[in-house]
Image 1 (cartoon, helix red, strand yellow):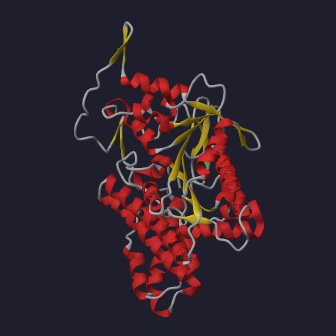
Image 2 (cartoon, helix red, strand yellow; image 1 turned 180 degrees about the vertical axis):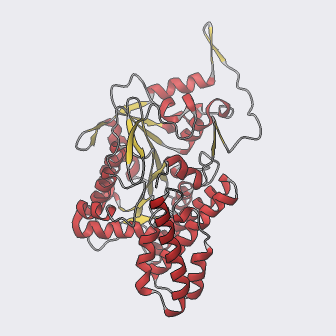
Length: 432
């Protein structure tokens, strides 16, 4: 099966039109008048760009992060209830930074890592890591019935490091996303537990999944979870009224994953993105509520695509999972710390290739949102940087004023939605 990462985004609700997002603005913002400096006029965007290029701290990456930028990130994250890493996927250094940051924060109360995988897949990856460390995760990745765009070697090393840093009796990985490719694996996990009254509906579900897989082997096309009716799973749930916790999680994940993609086929891009965001928010809320019932309030680190981790409305005007962390933290006087991590000048990243493969592409050329020269990886980068850099975005907020949305809405939204940016210089693509 061949499916590009853009195809996945489209099917998941992030529909893009050439050169512009499908989520258009309804009115032009007010014009900003330039101020005069000496004999020339200085525009608000010029002042903001100048501040972006100077408000930086160096960070180095070798065996572990170091430098003033790293020290500042750790200090800020330690004081927060949640730390969110919003990434451009497929960059090796980002996985390494995430692992090092979680380990550095363990002594500050961080004990949970929420990741962009479905709940049972995250649970079983953790179990594989508990059994056999990094090799256990790689063996799980090799299972022909399960696959994800996050199945990269550095991601496996990141997860192994997180699990290894946690006590053996502690559940550390929280999956909060839908499922996209591992339907056969999840369905196989149900088979031994299906009650007699649900056998018939379960058989229909299993056969539909298996037939979709066989068709894809002969003629690549959309996977099962992108093309079937959620009623297939709803019928099983109706015939199985009191499943155990794990079976219930699998059934709800399959049903909602099908529903999200059904909306992508029949509704608007915004509708399906909103439904996915709601599933992610509900998944995180369920985890937090379970901890609350046990009398625990762990600090949580989250790692996902930067469209999900931003505070407030995201880049397609949806209140995604990242927006709820600030409100949850504020209930007890806490806060969330949001970090966007992007490849900069001279970097490479891994994107989906044919089948279960990845290919390395130049980040200078990769433009997933089709924002052209205004894309974040270009505007936030410093071409003259001597190395990796950390930007304190909070200091720039007085300059990211109303009206600049007409110049670059993504940059303005990022400055208010993220507290810090890490910009790699010459980063490496993650390996298959």
